[in-house]
Image (cartoon, rainbow, N blue to C red):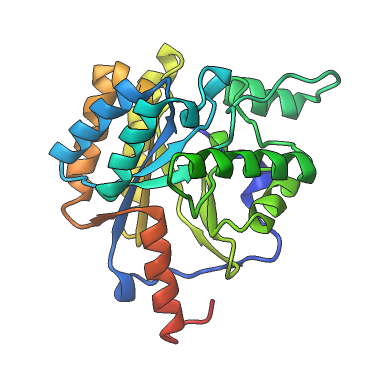
Length: 279
C-alpha cells in the first residue's frame, strides 16, 4: 500500500546483490515498528501472538521519544521490558527519535504528498540536513545506551530517508538500514532488493485494500531469499488485519526460517565472504 519516494529508492554507490537462495535458504524477518513507551501494551500483545504462531524473534524498531510523549531512558519499566525482549533474542533497531516531521513553509507538492498523505507527518528523516540527522542519530544511540542496549541498525520512520540522512547513518557507524524496497549494508556497500509487506489502517479504504495488496506481494516474493513483514501497533486494533497478518505468517514459516535483520545480514555477509559471489 505504501510507496517509497524515488529520491530514497536507489542509493548511490551500492551494487545490487543477486538472489542466492541456493546458498542461504529462505528467511522471514518480522519487524515491529514504533516500539515506544506509548505503544508498549499493544506491542506486548503482538509479540505474544507472533510467538504463538512460530515467530520467536523480531526486529523491534524503537522510538526514543515517541511524539515527545516519553523518553525510553526515563521509564524504568519500559527499559526493563525492552532489555528482557533483547535477552530473548529480539533485535533492537533505532527508529528515528521523535518520529515526527514538522510542516515547513514553502513545501512543494511532492514533499506534501510524501510527508502528509503517505505518512501523516511522520517522515522525520525525509529531508534532514546531514548535521541534524547526525545529531538525532547520536541522541537516539545515547537513549538506547542509557537503557543498556545498542543497535547495529537504523530504520527511518516510514522508510523515508533522504540523501544527507543516509550519509549520516553510515558516518554514525550503523551496520545497515532498510528502505521499503531494499536492505542496505552500510559497512560493505551491498543493496539487497526485497519489498516489505506492510499494512495501512488509517482509513477504511486502506484497510480494505491492504490485505489484497499484501496477498499479491506475498506471492511475488515467494522465491525471494528474504521476505520482510513490517507491522505497526495500530494493525492489532483491527481484527481483520491482525487475522490476515497471522495467516500470512503461518504460510511463510512453512518454507522460511524466522530471523532478524541483524542476523540475516550476518548470514549474507558470510555467504559473500565464502567467495561464491562478489559483494
